[in-house]
Image (cartoon, rainbow, N blue to C red):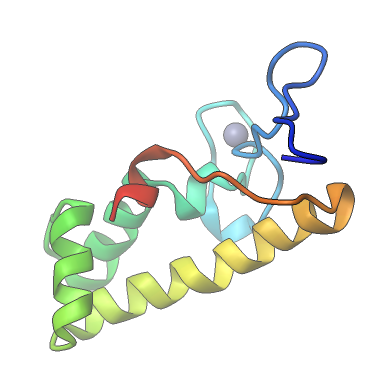
Length: 111
Ligand SMILES: [Zn+2]
């Protein structure tokens, strides 16, 4: 939001940042590019990351619960990775549009 209004953009995709480049470590995205925001901080990508380091397949809700409990080092690593990359990704948007507020949607924002 800027000056109290949601920025929708000319084609209605304003604020869609999921396919901005973030880091090569995210790998190939379903859009065809490599390292999109989606490949690193989306719910499915966080679940994949957790499985890659722990060998256990969990839903994000369980990962965040384990993170809050503080006794699962894989959950802690997964969530700290999210915080690090979320900060990197959102700072680019903030520096470009200098918003009043940022509205976060999607499944990651629920937890
Ligand atoms: Zn993409």
